[in-house]
Image (cartoon, rainbow, N blue to C red; front, side, top):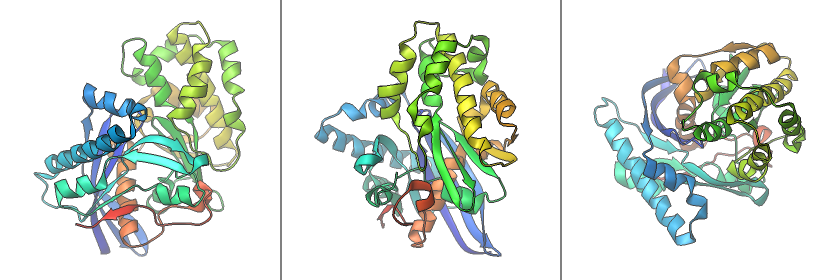
Length: 352
């Protein structure tokens, strides 16, 4: 065992479930990267923080800058609580932050959560702002997790994460990856119309009826014809997807049922092009039994559910790894994934 690094990964996803923290050990064994999650936890967002993060795109420039600092300080405080009883302390913190704007066609991908505030609160070197360099290099700035798939999970044919958005990566001559479409960001919004935070196990959608007219319109969306690197954000959902769904005066249960049918079809169609046999599934959507069943039926893939800590903390784990690579000046962002002009080692660093 050598090149051992203890790193803390921090992730805040578009689903607004909470702040994920994963304390990890990384080392190499016969030139292969290995990892162990030492401790992991999720800090649920209170209603106030949910509201602040959800509405951040409407703030003035000054208000936005202040929120960036406030959220960074909040992350730092949560880290201190998380680490209080840990026998080992991280050599670095790697924080993805919370995405507010993602417009790669304008070389823009903005995550809030000041790295300087995190470092100041914790006294630990912090890596943050992972997407900016790739965006400047004409890439999508995302997804970034595929680098971890390539080096930490090489034994799996396909890695699929079902979070606010669904993204997958596959080694197909080289590592390629893309956002396939919106997932929990849509399902949770529809569930909230029924007074629920989410559709537990997909049970509401399962009981609903598929609307053939809405299904046809969803399947005709041009986003599914886009070739090459693709990353999505709430801007697309709010300007194109939600207006389409809301144009249909049908029961919310039927909207859910239709979206499950639509997205399981589109995702399966895309995954089948690689002629692979198995898939590692992570993210909150792994607990949506109805969707997983639909995906398995339509794709024919063997779906592998890993241990709970990987399902829930794989993204935080991988950001800890990306931060580790950044401090080694090693490549942590792949042009084959993002469409950038070159591979890069992304992330701003506050050395404490």
